Length: 459
Ligand code: ARG
Image (cartoon, rainbow, N blue to C red; front, side, top):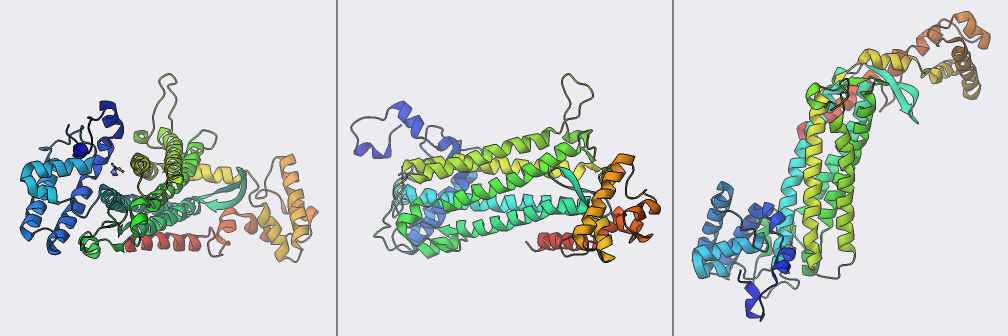
């Protein structure tokens, strides 16, 4: 195919170089943003008298036709084109002749691609935030259904203190709330127009950069033309934010995998969100959770790709930067898919409250509460801690627990014990007397649920 720069060159491009250079196979997904940016640019060129109003209108009209034709499938994207920017301009020129050649006045592909990727990522960030809201809503619902589901909280994967399933999942709710807030900020960093930076040194034409930004619904323009074309911070920030989303999903996946094992048996996944084994008929595997955990590595890889790609690039644009797209697109596709499937898996699982309670009863997770009970009777915490520890050892030796120990036995360990101890070590009481802000009591959990629900309504 004839190249734009044939005038300067005396030889045709090697065909493998063409393939190597080409980004159309992955940047064609930005065709809407490319056309949207070009429409705004053409409108501005017309308004500023850089091209005639007629030419501007003709370009805008045909760009809209091209967009509709690509959308309908009538205009297939040519895989031989170098990139989406070249493709759209070539089609435009083919359709409206010389007028089409005026579109690229006062613009370079360098500021064009920087604009396109910002517009594209902005749209994706909004979609991802929508998915996160869906996940938060699922978590809120699970919490509402499980405020009374007492279970053991763990440290070092050893049963530690009683919480509820509601409190447990709401911890993940907080992570995804932070993720969503982070994405809101990154959306703002992305919503800035670099158009007018030109190749690197702006332009001599009297363009109106703010008008283009306004037409595109962007919040402002970049301040330095060299930075404008070579900044990819917003893109890296996005992959980083998605890495954190994946890290949170991966931790949650690990819980789900453990919980649906026979050893825990805390939940059961819906058949529609589990898989069987090709050889072992009894198996029901948590493949979705495992894949989410596995795909987290991919997104971290995308982050490393983007960071490493940028680290040695002198100002301003260098072709290395074309590598940004596959990395960020992969991170976006992966994260979206994972959030969506994880949400469905979560909202269809069954929580086995009795199993949760049974596991909570076996691990002396009320030992701290037993000690606290003695503290309230006047014993210093360190002494109370020892008494409670001796009681644990006694219970293990005699195959019993705090709830079933007779009062005489308690009193052998300390005369401070009376009937009240049974209330103190009752698991429901242990949870619901933790009235501290942020704790697992029903009141606190209802407050946490309210925070998530209000956030979903307002964001
Ligand atoms: N496909 C290119 C990219 O993604 C567009 C910018 C090309 N600019 C250039 N000077 N060759 O980065």
